[in-house]
Image: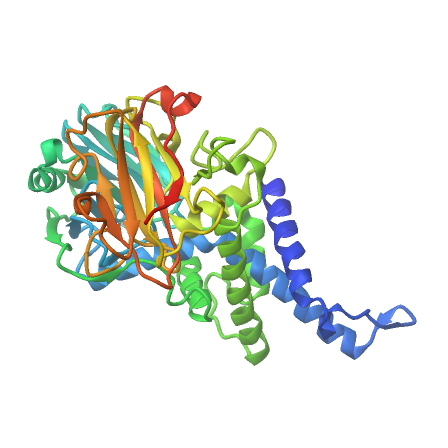
Amino acid sequence: MTSAHYTIGLLAACAITVSSWAGSSAAQDYEFKGGYPTAATVRKASDETDLNRAIHAYRFFYPTASSAAIFREMKRLGVQPNKVFGYMDTQPRHVGFTLNSDTPYGGMLLDLNVGPLVIEIPPGPLLGAVLDINQRWIADMGVPGPDGGKGGKHLLLPPGYEGDIPDGYHVARATSFQVIAGMRALPEAGDVQGAIERLQTIKVHPLDTGTKWTAPTWIDQTPMPQDQTPTKIEDKLEYWQMLHEIVNAEPPLQDERTHYGDLAALGIVKGQPFNPDERMKGILEQAAKQGSAQMRVESFADQRPDRMVWPDRQWQWAALRFENGTWDTADYRDTHAADKWFYQAIATSPAMFRRDPAAGSLYWLGLHDRGGDYLDGGKSYKLSVPLPVPNRLFWSVTVYDAETRSQIQTDQAKAALRSLFELKNLTGESVDLYFGPEAPAGHEDRWIKTTPGKGWFVYFRIYGPQPSAFDGTWKPGDFELSE
């Protein structure tokens, strides 16, 4: 898997990089004398080699930087690993890659340097997962997990742990010491406060009862504007500085050591200071700009045929590899699919993409109107959704700013139309949803405001999807221009 992962990512990066240098001095022929490169060729080839290596490393480690940004922001807001957890009823002012307001979130930053930790999930409609600092899946919990929503004890083992493992736990081994356990509570009958209270009944404690420990407390992050994304630094040198912090603090991913070799060649080595010279600073900054641009193109102008959900609709799969949470096929790891997902979103697990009506979910990406044009914040659209929507838990349509990849921010302070709230108790054969800068008369309660001059996209989510959502016998309409 590792060899194929490396090769596919490198080829993708190089193919785009070469074109970006076309017409410049970098595209000229190399010069050699007696088989040896001239001084000019050495400089040019060295810069190109380091740039290509840096772009490839940028793309591969983007999920790590994204996760590190979550840790950094949550700590700024008062969350402390193992000590203080945070919950929030997510709103547009909470900037995070394709977060949604369907359910409240509970975020638990954990530090496994203290040893194995136990997460006790109570019975009830809770769903979530544990991820390492690289956004690698560690465990599912709650409804999609092995406890199946009936409650259970999940044991997280730190990297390299070789101690005894007692019975009675759902055991998972982490690949980093810093991990995040993200939980969501289903607001039954629209009871958001009840869902928040349910999150706070989750317990965390060491496996070793002799470990010094104080029961964690919870803080409400809802009132706090925040930005849990790396967007402010994703095209700057600080992106690489953040990666250096993670490389220094965590063990390398053993099946991806080649990528740490790329970082080492760029001056990012565990246990060593990161002090790039002016040449390398310029290369790393350029790689960050090009890497971010390439991933944006890959996310919003994808050309893969298998991106389309139905041949007669504009909807795309938000996650191209929905069979598992590792983006693996039988013969290779799909780096294209991973890049597209992690540039738009956070977190992955097998359960997220499982075609299971009991606990699975579907994510459809809407970028274009019926005619194939990008959705425009200055125009008004209507989306017709056949009823009933085939779901067991809930469904929603959430609007995101194409620049931030987070919920759209307007004076409406609203970004989603949800079956648990605005779209409860629908009747009839279909419902029309509206999007645009002005509220449509008589339909204000089913409208999301957009901003002229800004692009936007949506995720259509179905939790607990039923068979007709998979076999094409049910499908939403396309966005259509409306007066």
